[in-house]
Each structure stands twice: as structure tokens, then as C-alpha cells.
Length: 259
Image 1 (cartoon, rainbow, N blue to C red):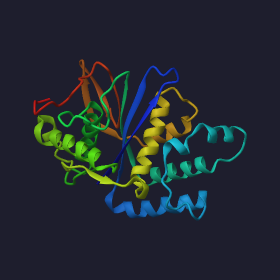
Image 2: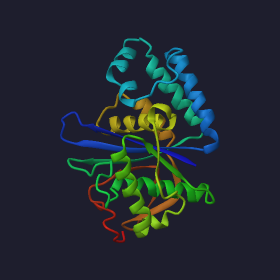
Image 3: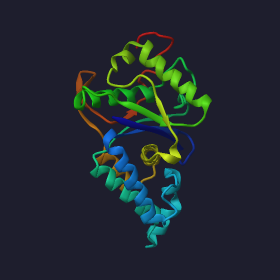
């Protein structure tokens, strides 16, 4: 089972807060080739015959300009493509997971400190592991990140490996392969779609309601678990999108200590 992961940082209009989104989209391994070809064809259909290999970026596809065009009854090729991609991914059974953080100062989603696994990663992996246990208990999840550079990849790999091998909770996530993989976003539709999802969620949580159509798409694809969490005596269902509260624990893993 493939889980493609990307992130988006955005700020509120008053610039008081940053919103960080770490998103993951799930694609069955045997569906990936067909999915990749179909999205390639959608790019050509909407953007022209040379567009099959272009990289989709949420910050470009959902920029304010294209929404203003549609307000003037001018059809946007980018938004039409986005609608086609979301519709196809939903039909294909792709599910969405995400961690959303609100803070003036929040640990970088890049896991810069190799001793720590920040809150967004913990909650994302927790939900991926729950999904696998509930639906594919005999299979393993492969987590795939955007390949950036050797330094970034090395720090991220070390932080993720430390979490899975040296923390008590990380060791219990036994339906996830305990080493991250990396893919070049320009060549990978999974990473590109994860970027689209992250950008839409970031826009929503920074107060932009103009993209509500696409937020509804994301919510309709959100993983819904049968597992329930007990919070202060009340049970709440576990959902794929976790909005992290400030009162929740800060560093979840430090130098091998149990969580």
C-alpha cells in the first residue's frame, strides 16, 4: 500500500499565525500505474499535448487569479483539471490523511532535529497505521516523501527511523515499513496530488473560503476509522485529518524515551 506525503505552509491574512499541513494520500500499489497514466492523460486533455509531464503544484493551480477568472464566467483550465483529478481519485478509492498545526512557532515539518518526531508526523503515522490494521492487516504501508536533497532526505530518514525503532509507540506501528522512501515530485502523481490536498487544507485553515468546492472534495475522501479515542471520558471517532491542539504534547519522542 502506497502513501505519498507532502506539506504546505501558509499564513493567515493578518500574518499572526502560520498553518502547516502534512498530507498523505493512499493509493493501492496495483492501481498506481493506471492512476499515473490517467492523470497524465488528464493533463494533456486540459492543458495541451505538451503538458503531460508538467508538475502539478497546488500553489499554482489554486492561485487567486484563476478563481477570479471563473467569477467572470471565464473557464479556468487549471481548475477544470483539478476537478477532473479529484473526481478520478475519489472514484479510484483514494483516501486522504493529514495533520494540521496552528502556532506562532511550531516545529518544522521537515523533522530538522533527528532526535525528535514532531507532532504532525506522529498523528499522521498513527492514522495510517490504524487504516492498515483495520483494512489490510496482513499488508504493509510504504511511506513516500518528496525527494528534495541529500541533507533533507538524510535528516528526515534518521528522524523517522529513530521514531519507529527507538520509541515505544513507534515500535507498535507494525503495519508501516520502518524506513521512508523518496520520489521525485516532477515524475510522481502521488506526490503531486498530496501537494494539492495539503494546499487546499492550508487555504481552508487560513480563512480562505473561496476554495470551499475543493475542500469538500478533500473531506469527502477523508479516512473514517472504526476506532474511537477516549478523551476526558468521552469517545470520539478517529478521522484521517487531525487538527492538532496546542494543549497536546509537544515533542513526542526525545532520545529514546517512551512516549
